[in-house]
Length: 253
Image (cartoon, rainbow, N blue to C red; front, side, top):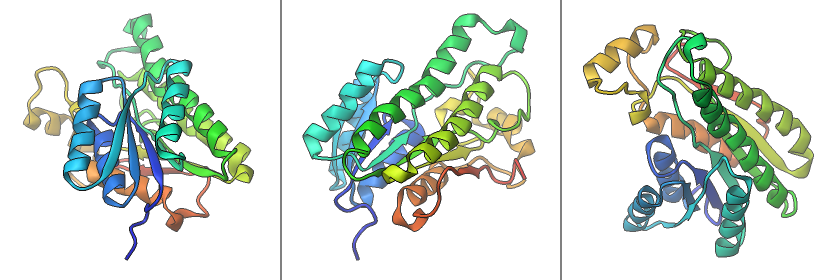
């Protein structure tokens, strides 16, 4: 039986670690050729090696999502190497140290918005410009379950960035579905990745801090988030357009 993404080229940002790495590995396992895009060339190369060691196809490209020229070059490199760009998972993001809104450094605000929101906007812009000239494609952006409702304080810049991703994606989805491009969002809750640790925090302390508000009683495994990404990227979700799929163990129920 053919894999869901045989013959497809998938471009994954932030693919050097965390959910992005799991996404890249999963797309490759289902037949896609994966372009591993990350600002850290060492971790990107590690992801590529893991894919290749498991019989998959991948290449790395250094991309700074805050820089339009860098993103454009990354997309163009993907197309020139592999012939097309069919799927994009715009996953790169950062989570700032929590703190009261009025105490947030302006540099932190600008950094979070630049990577989490503007970065997704730039990626979509250049991905769409290629996809609409080549018969369409699928884009899945990384949101957050706290993007639509701030369930706790101390993360103002992050909440703002993810709310922007969700609504920007809906707008772009309406703009470009007639171009054959489906755009959706996956919004994880707290997940078992390095990003959810505070400095010096143990796994036990992290669990105590985060799982109290999760009815499922645990953090998400990255594979559970990526399963939603792959479904939205597949033909199984062919009529899903402009949707924000929350995967958070019931935290936002």
